[in-house]
Image (cartoon, rainbow, N blue to C red; front, side, top):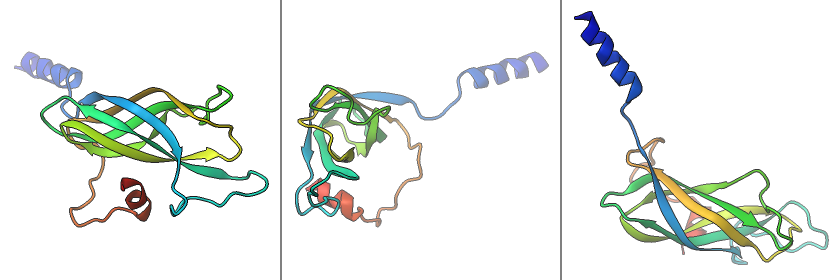
Length: 152
């Protein structure tokens, strides 16, 4: 009996239950300045300081039949001089749940002011899960003002 118990314990340790990661395809990614009336946009200063607001927009494709949840977007943002605009950072944000099919997305990026443009996007991809891995927002929870600005 103890052999069976030991074998079962070993199997449970080797194959734990839980959420499985799912890779999604990101297409047509572009980086563009946030709209002038955006609540995160900053007025131009004579000398660049702080960060500038940009939006990463694109299309994410979920070929499955079920939504992919808690989805993160990864990409390398390259500035006009060919250097990474966001040094040591490839996770650029979370887009939440992705229904089956193609879905547009938009993420706000804070790029250091004075970084030369135009910006290009390399190695864009998304990764989510087949089950929630984070605390979920309630059905009555509203989008934050910053999320509302980019969703339009």
